[in-house]
Image 1 (cartoon, rainbow, N blue to C red):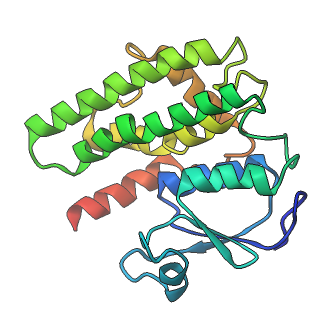
Image 2 (image 1 turned 180 degrees about the vertical axis):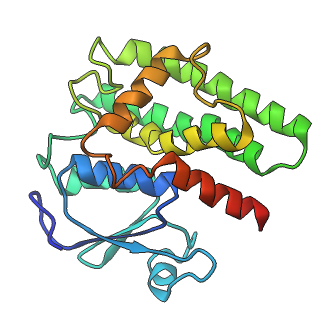
Length: 232
């Protein structure tokens, strides 16, 4: 399928439907109004195309633009702005250099301070360690809520605009998984008592036309996938 606008060219995304990192790239592609082919990868039996396209990490997502691979979700989202300027509703990153730096800072913070401990809490078998890591993740979300309050400027998005931007996309990729975690583990990652504004923001993310039915999977599907993984 041909990409709309910008520099054009064929876009192909290698990924798995359940990956929040893949979901953030799909959200960016949708907001940018870009057509692409989605290739579902089997992480237990990785394709030769994936291994050749990302020989360093051998992980999804990988975006192929006219056959040229771009790896790592944050890098891919930034690349889409550079390669397809003006497509969709506009750029995801702000034009002001300082605002861009701030957005990139919070993108990095989300992955290292929120996702890393949250992910660890899901896979550890120690209840004490699970609680410790979950506490770190929730503390990070409280910090992110503070950033949201400063950045959204009454618009309801981290971008401070009438539409989602870079930080919205990066955190938005986790929304489906966060909701599913509450069902599987019994602990709400987004807690209305701790982070009420992020809870409301998450509702706006899943209500976007760009996410409905194609980017963020239904919670039930993610829950079933998680439970099957845990059984294995």
